[in-house]
Image (cartoon, rainbow, N blue to C red; front, side, top):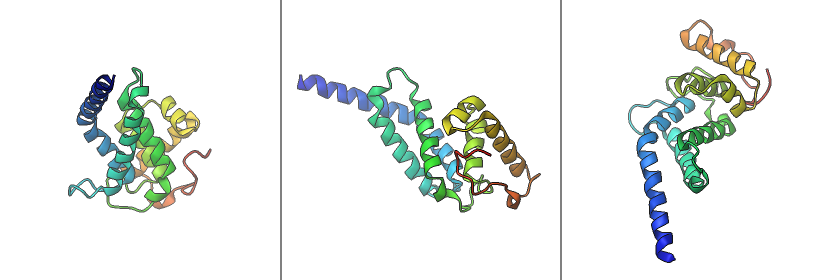
Length: 164
């Protein structure tokens, strides 16, 4: 009995290690975009690394309960939810690619354009209407293109789940 349990734990650890080996790079890049930290030099994205470590530990804790669910999708959902809860920590510009955007704009832009999550799923994940996701995404793209001044942000202080 004890030997079977040890084999099961070893197999669980190997499966999780294989998942992390394949997905950690993309997940770290996603976390780095969300936290608006620079990716270079290596190690400059301390907040993103902490965020990802917390998310991966949660995924590992839930690993046996996934029951055929896509671990990448589950981890991405946890990453977005944890970032949304901790967004107040990520308001200051840090020199990253998306540091001109508010945390909400970053979250929506990264989910929609970088991760390719459909509007409906993004809205459900954030607990906001689809129209809100569309408006935030359009505003984010306009800001990044430079067609909208980053200082003219309406509702900048609004929480992530708040209605427009």
